[in-house]
Amino acid sequence: MIFRAFLVGILIAFGEIINGNFRVRYLQKKFGRRKGKNISLCSGILLFTLIAYFCLPWIKPQNLLECAGIGLIWVMVMLSLDLYFGRVVFRLPWQKIVDDFNPLKGNFLGIGMLALLFCPSVIFLLK
Image (cartoon, rainbow, N blue to C red; front, side, top):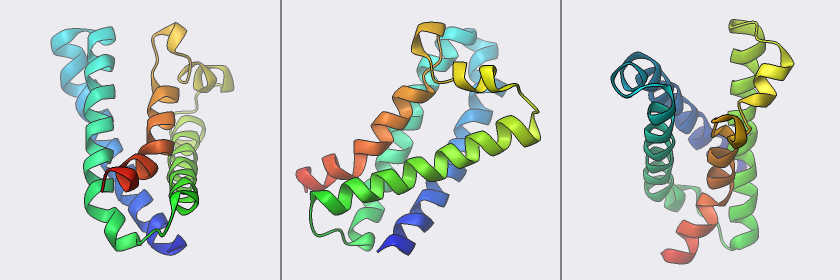
C-alpha cells in the first residue's frame, strides 16, 4: 500500500507541475498574479482530488488511519518536490520558499498541502 501511495503521489506531483506551469504561463498573464493563484489553487485541488478519487481504490486503504498515512505520503512527496525546485532548480532563498506557504502574503501552497493531506480521508468517507 505504501508503494502504491508513493506512486500516486508522484502522479499528483506531475499534475501539479503542469498546473503550476499553466498558472505562470497563462492564468497570471490573463488574470493577474493574485487571481491566477486563486484559480490555480482551485484547479490544483480539483486535479489531485480527481486523481485520488480514481486511484484510492487501487491503493486499497482499509481505514481512516491508513488514509491519513496516504495523505502524509502525498504531502511529503509534494514538499520534497517544492523544496527541490525552490532550492536547487530556481535557487530561491529559504525565506521565499517559506513565504510560498503563507496565505497572508497571497500564497496558497500551505492551503493546498492541507487539502492534499485530508483528501484521501474525505474520499474514503464519501465512498
